[in-house]
Length: 588
Ligand code: OXD
Ligand code: MN
Image 1: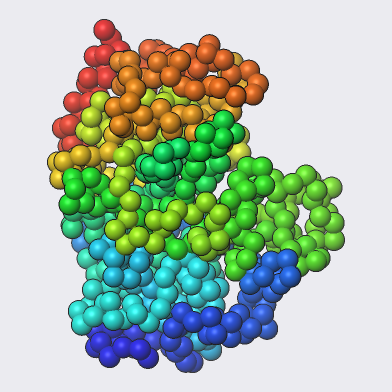
Image 2 (image 1 turned 180 degrees about the horizontal axis):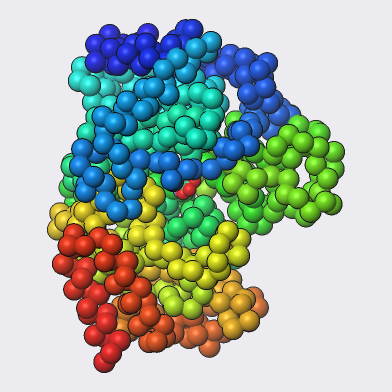
């Protein structure tokens, strides 16, 4: 016990009375205690010790077969009024949900230990920091939270005498998918998660706190919690400029966050620094700019597809003190996943723990298998990662996966138009996802599953924030995924995305012109640097990537109207005006 705060203790004991653990262990964040817990978990099989010579400090974990991803249909926002949750969130009256959950939590920790994890999102004491306590019956959760957040008893001092922290209760219970719930009570600063052991559902600091709850706190306190990576581009003069970027899943967010510049840039002295790969908290600074921190302390990344070719910085981040979940376990105590290299191992176990024969066509790793790695391991981690003031953001970048509609890059005309560009973000489904191919899925600001309140009120909050920041970031949209008529990607992507980021940064600092188009400002094709680009990318390719097809955009306008109609009268006037202007521009 590291606190006498009655508000903290009474809540912990109240939850213990309901869940009835055999004992309570107070986590202090020390390596000794974490090691003791790992040793216990090796005995029960909850964790498997990996080859400590090759992967020092690394462990392996499997989640239950029916428990391998976030469960959006079982995720609830239980604010007082249904209309405040909006049409894109599940809602239930708080009393009804508490009654349902307490029935499930009743005795759920019998025969188990309850761990009390004090943690901070962002650096303890930073103006951005928010604190949480997670109660859990899972050692996997304890060791993962110790990577993903800043765990330590200093959090109790930071919370101080008031009760200002996010309460999180998690129990694996029976891992019963029918009784699995991920629930947020914004008015009580409370999160409850039950019957799951999958990271995205149970590491409560991440999506539940740092996005859903924090979006509500940001609305009330005048800041923003966003599903964005943060990166810094250092130019040859040693000046670093920062951008934040939001993409729906499967658009290469972690790859962009850890981008390696093409050789011609590296030779000139450009460097890219990663501040965060998933979440950004943004606040107006005293200088009239928007400043951002990554509230997390580690990366919870999708393993398949991560290789020394696609993202060496991510792979190198996992080489020590990391957790691998649902990947292939090799006989030498190391791990493998599809896309790591072209040599699937023999004699290995698949993610289900079964002997795996790569030649039978089955996947060895689950497609949503993960690594949980300390940010500090990342070779390109920004020096500002631990700066409690954050970094000043010059550009906000939105993006999606569009075969034809969106050009490689365009710039919004102003903040409100940028909010419009974010609100219409969409991705087309690929063959890899289940369901039809080419269906447009709207995912405003990539926040559809993560906004803790009504999406249209969230857009209004964005509009309001623009008024609070004298010198707001410029807002852009990118599309790395344009296809030619044969279905091939036209743009090489990966490190070459640097060429587009360079244009974006030059725009932010008034160093380059742009041309007007019906949808916003576009680069002159010759202003995208193609020097040193291998393959077939020529000026004509860039011209092609920058075309705006009027017919497709008219269809897009119809799609946006249909999408906005879900939100009724709440859609901010500024966004409706942007939509009318877009339509008028297309009809000119
Ligand atoms: C994630 C997600 O896991 O966005 O980061 O789903
Ligand atoms: Mn994410």
